[in-house]
Amino acid sequence: MNELDQLVSSAQADFDVAPTPAELENAKARYLGKSGRVTELLKALGALPFEAKKARGAEINQAKARIEAALQARREALAEAELQAQLRAEALDVTLPGRQRGIGGLHPVSRTIERIEAIFASMGFDVAEGPEIETDWMSFTALNNPENHPARSMQDTFYVDLKDEQGRWLNLRPHTSPMQVRYARAHAARCAGMDPMPEIRVIAPGRTYRVDSDATHSPMFHQCEGLWIGQNISFKDLKFVFSDFVRQFFETDDFDVRFRPSFFPFTEPSAEIDIAFRSGPLAGRWLEVAGSGQVHPNVVRNYGLDPEQHIGFAFGMGPDRLAMLRYGIDDLRLMFDGDLRFLQQFN
Ligand code: DAH
Image (cartoon, rainbow, N blue to C red; front, top):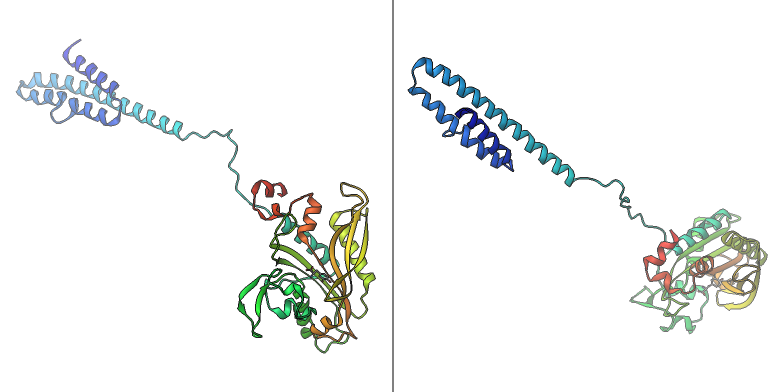
């Protein structure tokens, strides 16, 4: 092996062990750089006579071309290795389960309220919403509560540190019944001069508040008010509407309904509505599901209507209670603890 062949194999060996592109370029400089070994050989040509210079020059250039080829080959090998390493690092395991988008879901009470709304809407009822901070007049006076009624007391009702125009403390509404008054007054105003006045048929679901907390009471809970006022609406209509609601809500005909005499200041006569399933886990137990009654003439007057002309019924039920019955939940507090393990079961 002559001296140039040795130079080529030495360069080749140096290049092949260079582990990185930077070190490869250092190795290259040792052969092809300004004072590299090939460059030095070429510089030395100047001292040779013309013919010798030509022959030697051709040999050196050949060797230089082989070194450059070796360099190029190593550059490509390193680039390829780098690419492969990068691909390995970014490799996707397509067999891993996908990351789910957290899409959330409806709370069981929201589902229940939507269900109640859909059923009553199918019977021609409007759905109304109203304020959770109420005036004393709307929550109590308009609903025929006497001034000294215990519901007004601080033990039962949350008050807000603000007064209305009458100088009375605002309250967190303890029931949705004020919505009877708000809706009926707006309806009466809208329909002024119409004879006969179109019927009022509305439900009003929403949050309500009372000073109460145990396994069956929460300081925040839900109610859904119902009101049907017309020229000739009676208890038989209430019984039909409510039974039909129960049938659709629980998807069964297999139950009995009973009206149990009761008292509310805003209705006369008043009744609790109880239902009892004839089969299933709750078979034979009377369950109280709503308060109801024929709207008291004083309350009709507070709607801005003449009780001689307008008659009907109201009811108030608890969507939380209905959700618990429908889903078989035994502790109301589960509904409002926000525990995802509980809530996820409904979605
Ligand atoms: N407001 C009553 C309550 O909070 C429920 C109720 C009873 C509503 C009778 C009514 C009704 O509309 O007619 O307990």
